[in-house]
Image (cartoon, rainbow, N blue to C red; front, side):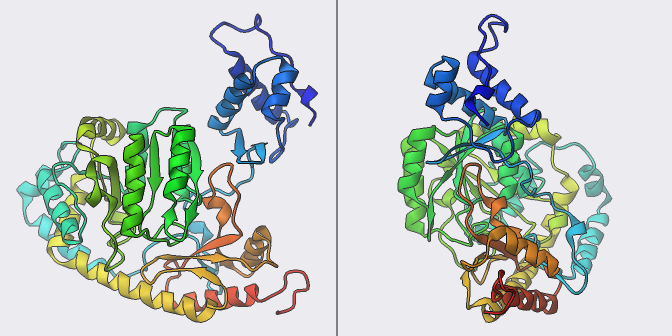
Length: 467
């Protein structure tokens, strides 16, 4: 593409309500639609395009920001602005991805497949024995959820060292819905949210859907780096910060308590709220204090029962600072009026029966055993993993290109998730894949998949001979 592709900007052919920067963004959109600009192509520098169009550099900067907000382009630090990848893989959960019986699916962080039929039967029978209560559950309720249910769930979480206040928590339809509520309640189109340099794809997808700009913050072995967060806050003036302090997805990193305090100090300095995604927080038997325990008025805390109890319940929770309670209540009401009281009642029965604790212990035991198998088969390679984590982060050997490895794994009937899915717009994709070791239906299938991956990792992709 040459810079002459861009047409001169008219100040008379468009209404006054159509600013110049939006006209430039519209040109970018049209050039992409007609194929003049192709996926991954680099756009002119701000200065060069400004000189060509006889506008200010600031106007081009706003135009590129508008195009990025629309998902048309992505800015890469130190490299320039590029047309967004049209064929980037998506993150929609799809059961059709399940491979044949001779393969292995490491695709998604689903809980191990345990037998939950008896406990659910008992919980439903208990509910059915009280017709008056059951009828009450069939009525409209407050968007926040039934007070007695919130009290019981909050008490259970407090026993797990999570400082949730029953008066402030809201039930949600899972953790993903909690994240969506946080974005819709606190962000407007065009706002910026900061995330880790590799982040949960479900959140990146939500941000894109709501036209929220995502910018990344560097990470190290303890997660988000406070100094980098401080610089990003100064540069982007974000509306929110999103991170997963415990068993981060995809890296498995857990922040130390001091790192958590340092991150909160930066948030307080810049007066910005932080979303603490604690969806994996119940998995470790011991972990540093959640952010919400350290400074609840700076934290939007979200979590759920999908990983530790049953994903089919679709019961999550969110707690925001006290001053934002009404805002959250209105957002939830606008989303769904309320969360099913029948599901929250069922979860409460499972907690009261002791089944929630029993299932959590079973999952912990199973995941620890799976992680031991990972260490046995893949210890020769660069792995980030934790005995309580549903996934591992595998950095590929230098002789493997990321796209080639993912394709080769698919040919071997092994499903893995490329680092590309976890990389925010404009960031360099690391040569790594995430393996959801919780996904295989049993340990035998897990071992089979690990063996296939080990053989693949030891194979030179050029010569096709084992190294």
